[in-house]
Length: 167
View (cartoon, rainbow, N blue to C red):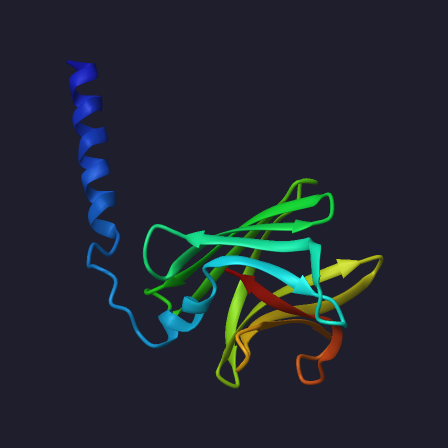
């Protein structure tokens, strides 16, 4: 009897939890299509426009049309990321995991028509906001920019890369 009551309470709790989530299908908005360019294999371009084969991004479709699974390769360093549209908050979500044990959840914001990921870091006593953007260019490349700020008004470029999709 006690086991039956526990099973019933568990089942009732599971049913309640399933109704707590939004069960409606994804309605794709223009912001949810921002990263439609992103699926594929991308390599960094060197200054002379040759391919830097040590830096690459492998991006595949995730569980829905506005979700992507990303494998990042930088020489011998590897990481995995999930990038997905969150219809509840009308913004992108981003989680990054590295092979050396880092786990980072980044916030996202739209700036001048482009979506950036944001995260605060403290490294050797230096606390700053970091942001990265993956900005599609007219020539089909993607500009990856990384910036930092101490006041979120003035942004200092940390690095930029041009990425080229391989066919």
